[in-house]
Length: 359
Image 1 (spheres, rainbow, N blue to C red):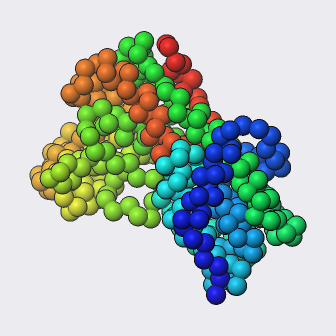
Image 2: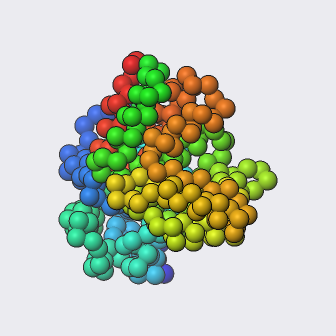
C-alpha cells in the first residue's frame, strides 16, 4: 500500500530544484508568497519542511497525493516523515538552504505524527490555524488541478528560492571587532531580556558564551522530546559530562535548584550552574549557605548567575581566549546559536543589526 519515493531519485530532483532556484529568473508568485508567509513569526517552524517534502514527492511521481503524511493512508500516499528525514533535511545541510526548523526530524512533531493525511488535522494552536489552512489549501490545489511532475517541480523551485534567500541572509557574519567588553556585555544584556523569544535568547547566549571556553557545547531545543541530560546547555569532554546549566527567564526557588542539582549529579555532572535573568526572581545569592549545602549534599560545585551580564563577565574572566578573540567571535556564535534554537527571524536580524559588518 502506498508509494515509495526512491531516495536516490528524490536527491537528484531536489538538487535540480536547488540549482534552478539559485540561477535566478521568474518564479511562481503564488508559491513564493506561500513560502514567505510560512516564515512569519507565528508560523510553525515545521511547515516549510513539510511543504518542500510534499512538492518534492509530487515532482518525483505525479500519482502522489500531495497531502500525504503516512503511507498507510492509501494507495497514493507516501511517508512524509521518511522522505523529509531521509532526503530533505540532509540535503538542506549539504546544499545550504534553510528549512526554518533546525531539528533532524521536523515531521516527528505536532501536528504531523498524530495524523495520516493533511485533511484529518483538526487540533492546532490558534495562531497556527491560518498557516495550516493556507498550506493545506495549496497542497489540495496541486491534486485538484492535477499537477504534473513538471508543474510540481516549478512550484518546488519557487519555494526553494525562498529557502536559499533566507540561508544566504543568515550566513552574513555579525562582526564585533570594534567594540569593547563593557559595550558587548551591556548590549547583550539589553537584547536578551527584551523583545520576543526571551527564554530562547537566554539559552542561546549561555551556549554562545560557553563556546568561548569549550569545544563541545550542546544546546537543547526548547521542549525537545529527545533531551537526555538535565539542564538546557551542557559541556561534554571526551571523558564524559562536565558542566550543565539550567537557563531560566522566570524566578527559580531554592527547592527547584535543589531538584536540578540532584538530577544533574545523578546524570554524572560535577559542575552544575544556574543562569536566571528576570526581575521577578528572588535572589538565591543572599542565602550564603545554599550553595555550600548543595555542594555537600550532592558532591559537586554549584554556580549561580542572576543576570546575563554577570554570566558574560565570567566568560571574559575564565575563557582561555584573549579578549579580542571573544569580542570578534561571540556575536557570530550568538547569531548561530539563535538560529539553532529557532529564535524568530526578526530577533535574529535585530541582533545582527547591533554588529554591522565593518564596525
